Amino acid sequence: MYADAGQRAALLGLAGAVLGLVHVGTALPKLAERFHTTVVGAVTGNFVPGAWVALSLLALAGFSLAAMRQPVGWPLAAIGVVAGTLREAMVGNWIRLINPIHLLAGSFWIGTLLVMMIAGLGGISRSTQPIDRRTMVVNMFNAFTPLALVSAAVLAVFGVTTAWRHLKRFDALFTTPYGWTLIAKLCFVVMIVALGAWNWRRQRPQLGTDAGVDSIRRSATAELLVAGVVLALTAVLVSLPSPK
Image 1 (cartoon, rainbow, N blue to C red):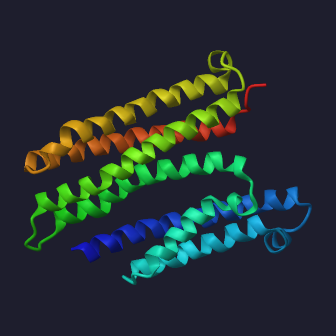
Image 2 (spheres, rainbow, N blue to C red):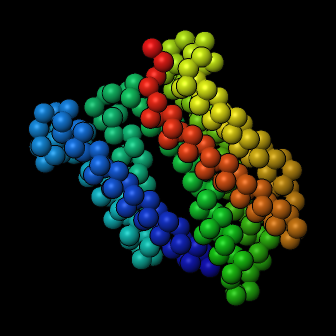
Image 3 (tube, rainbow, N blue to C red):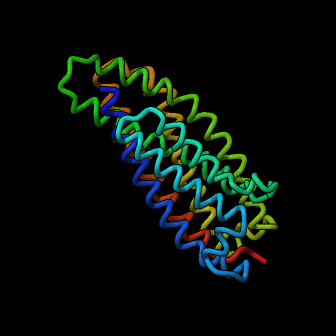
């Protein structure tokens, strides 16, 4: 049962690693233009782009091994994902870690919840093995709760920092397209936080019952749907110019 869930989680990670490599491939030409060289030259002649490619490939290899039920794949995938996201730290560009840390915190929270819903709850509901489904769900959400709480706190701190760096002045929040879009995003973020708090305070204590499991599945699905709206608004935000 656990091996099957781990394999499904690894396949989800593998899909994400493939998309990550596609993103690297689309970003490299712009990096090459910045460095006034070719794509190959940017990768081989500059540490950060080269590390980005290498660590993305490491993540792909790690998730591939994990999907084949090789335990060594998980630490390799973790190194590839985390170190690849925080690659600017390798050359001391600390100010450029604000957005990556914000991204990692959101991924740890919402990404882990998505994997739990698909690989965890989905596998438990389909299992034909004689298992205590309620106990497994309780253990899974109890293990997830500390990660979600820490990730939400980090997300909030670095989200505020990112917003302030882009807005530059408070009135821009109400007078610019960037500010209006940010307000819309924050409204949905508040909804995610509220749903997460509801799951933690009200739903989690009821997980020992079948009704509690069904209820938290519905609320967690709603949390993921709202998170999808947040991601869409984030995509709009990054396409808008920062207020002058």
